[in-house]
Image (cartoon, rainbow, N blue to C red; front, side):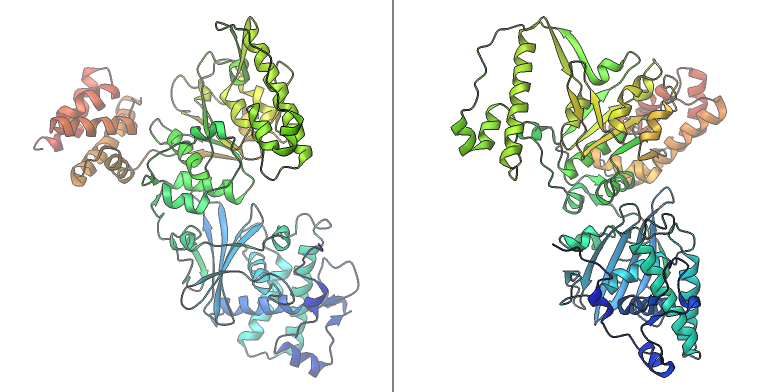
Length: 596
């Protein structure tokens, strides 16, 4: 099948939009020009050609900037201030095309939305459906955002010239035509000749055109403002909406948006978490989910105080994606072997009969069942050659397991290694507690581009493309050590979590405890934060003051119906072992509750 292109030959045969068609006739200028001043700086040849679809896109975006159309353009930034998406609503043929572009994955999502708010997939780029101008319009906009990576000065200058001509009623047709040629040539060169201009290109995953087309924006994702811009550059977003604050999503809702159909071995499906589906999912988890689905990011480090939801979020993400969750809890004595494979005396030494192998007939008639007979799993689309290779691998593994059971020592692979064999979420907990420097470096090859590690018994493990690794830790506590920079460098994202706000403390504790006294909980949350700050400012130290302590305080208050007494053993006792410190906290913070 031939590759589909935005700049295919048939797209140049389309009619040039007005008023440029008229200007060309008046000035006797053809679609192709040889004038040096009309060629882009990226043009190594001697000619440039007007591309109708690009020109339609440029004019449409110019109308949005000039507020002459109902379209809108904007961007969405994450908590770290980095750009998540370029956002656009593009009017065309009576409908509105809602588009978002992910600059990390270089992929787009989009839908055609009718006046009745019916969502349809974007038309395919073909002679019978679309010339791709809506896709090009997004790439035009991407080239114009001055503070972002893909801004292009030559394109922007000529776009401004063209927009000024449009605004003034086209006083200088030749000037407008020159700007049009330069815009078309510039965009074409930066998309089709990227190898020649590696720092100037517009990244775009062209495989989207060849396969099932641009992925459709789901109505649920749009309604829930998943792709809503938090900065509207021009126009008003009627479909994507403008993000005023992060929406509170439930686990069930996010599963509909982010759920994946990755193949998981049947024997590990019971390790997919089963948290309540009405559980609220915070911004941090949403950010990581978006990165996993919208980009190749698979390695994350999450730091923050105890109780900020690091492990819970890892489990939530596993459940939403539909993959098993594995965890390894590190401590001061964790060594390289515990991270990978541990050796233990075989206390259950036993001798087994020979391994029951499937027959040739069984394999030919039902290769999937033949592999399952040896405890394996076969993709339903696997070829016979792939099935045979899997059968051999499982037979070798079964032999190893038999030998292991009959030996004096057994080797137990870690949760990290087991999880890396399949699509999974793997959490390495409290890695900064490890005493021996460089221990985590044993995983470097597994974390870098080679994605593999050699085990002590000779097997090479290759990390599954959808094995997602979380390193979660509390970097601010006394027992924690500075992380190995070689490990940090291999992380795709490092998320430093701030302590929960009073509002977040209240929302979470109401869900987890069932307490509905929101006004009281709000006062408790504000006082709880104040107590932690007082410990730090007055005594120069920080006691244990995380979400778990607030939840325990709430539960004890529900039991005793006395907010001060409930705080004694659940909060004050953990803030300080010194009675004088606790007395000061009582006097400074708890007095407001005397009447409670």
